[in-house]
Image (cartoon, rainbow, N blue to C red; front, side, top):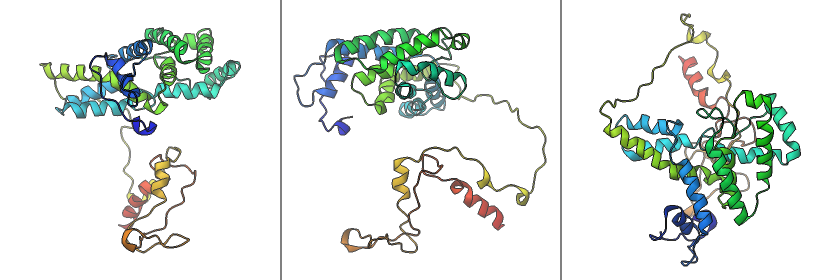
Length: 330
């Protein structure tokens, strides 16, 4: 965060509580006498408390699964954070913000709900695997949001969120399916109002949830019946089928691949090449590094257009093309 903002970090202040010190370390780098607003510190403290632990969710289950093999606590928590990073888990509050921004205003809500019911849109921040009536945390966070907005200014998207919640709770389609706002519906608005960029939302989720991860990890160490996790898998596929020869099988490159936008990191990597083999000189002159050496490439940089690709930069056929050649060469 400090690298992005260009401000020096502040040393922790031991006289403050956890949430207040968290805000202090963000903003006191240029002014050691800075003191966070106590009401904002209280709001962040409530957010952290609501996210600290929530039984056997996806990331907590990952932590316990890893801990069951006897790994160190750092590996168990790192695996849990990896699960938390997913957009269906810890990244859901960022998805809510993007959804509200797409809706734009209260007048567009009926059309949006119609697209949701027609399976043309996905509504984030509604529904929960545990709470089938209403997520009690959502009410608390909504009150926190109003408190934060009174201090730092009102986010216009909160009006869209409130109206969307009201419309959905009066719509029989969502009522019958028990789709009510969950903890992610308002939390993104609170964190954005507090000045955190969306890419840090998962970090703000992980900071308090680490307490829950560590509690489960510690509990697993003292459980006398603890065994390595081995979930049962029930095969429900085809029972008997013929075994076709390799030559009769369709090429692996014909398999469909998920179309995901190419990331900027992939574009950077694909714009390069290999440092061995036949020399490749970019157009417009030679590529020279330190000492006057010329960089050589085994192949020219590939086109990095907007075609279908994995976010890692793999285009259809890349991952399986070598396998096809290996099989057909035999």
